[in-house]
Amino acid sequence: MEHLINAKVKNIEISGIRKFFNLVAGTEDMISLTIGQPDFPTPFHVKAAGIKAIEENFTSYTHNAGTLELRRAAAQFVKEKYQLHYNPETEIITTVGASEAIDITFRTILAEDSEVILPGPVYPGYEPIIRLCGAKPVYADTTTNQFRLSAEIIANYITDKTRCIVLPYPSNPTGASLTKEELTEIAALVKEKEIFIVADEIYSELVYEREHFSIGTILKEKAIIINGLSKSHSMTGWRVGFIFAPEIIAKHILKVHQYNVSCATSISQIAALEALTNGKNDAHEMKEEYLKRRDYMYMRLKKMKLNVVKPDGAFYFFVKLPSQYENSFEFALALVEQARVAVVPGSAFSPIGEGYVRLSFAYSMETIREAMDRMEQFFLTSI
Ligand SMILES: Cc1ncc(COP(=O)(O)O)c(C=O)c1O
Image (cartoon, rainbow, N blue to C red; front, side, top):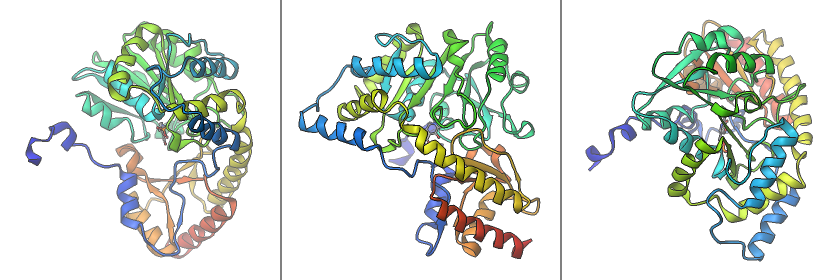
């Protein structure tokens, strides 16, 4: 029966991250710097709210867009933190993680043959959905601009078919986050064009040394803002995300969401309400710790003479491999075999990521130190 499977689905491959993981799983004494989720537990008060929700039988369907109380809390949170203004009654949808937000957004706005501009390298969660929609991903090379997608770069890739530009900032895998000035230039470029902006701001609470700036403050009419609690509150398994979009867009996305999942998990919604009201600054402590790790790792990578850009946010380094290593998958395999350190091959983040590897610092200082020692030794003996 396999020949009857939808061809678009057949053509999707499992992510390069997963492929690599499957290959090296079970290697003994391996230190992994591969993970893309916080290494902190969900804050206690948030977990307690979830437990209480179960005990009090808050276990039924909610409004499709999430409880109004939660949407009000989300509206207040993004207003206080990022000066965004969204009406909780009509412009906010609670989703099953940012992942569902990405899925239903693309399915709402893309048609066959639409082109979607993405920065390359980029998080691998967009391309398969774009392809399922019959649309085409177009990767804009950011490697010559310190991984920063600029209006100038985007302009080279815009055609009559461009329907959407994806702006993930801070970025997974590069940690680059766009500034107010850069976003203002991008907004000016698309202002008169029939192009949506999908801003994936899931790492907005993890921007180091400056405030996060959201494009929703200057281009609300075209912007669909995706956010969630996975990274800010270390809640990846609770699956809570949000879409912020003008009513004329949100009302259509809501239909796709309704037929997709009905609503986000009721229990997780209660925990999310607690996180967004009594835990508004829960990310601060984690951010301080990530910052120390980032600076330490930066120092160590520089000492290894590697070409590396200091990330503005998130918890990743995207490191250029020395020129003798052309294939990032083979390099990552050799690093596991010879140094017992696992990193993610850059090719998992679009073809533009080839020649790089992603290192996560969502690990304890002790783990990072040991991994850096091993990597240093690897380069000393293999170059
Ligand atoms: C840029 C980016 N967007 C979205 C997601 C998915 O987030 P969620 O776990 O909330 O679905 C991730 C997860 O790693 C990510 O890195």
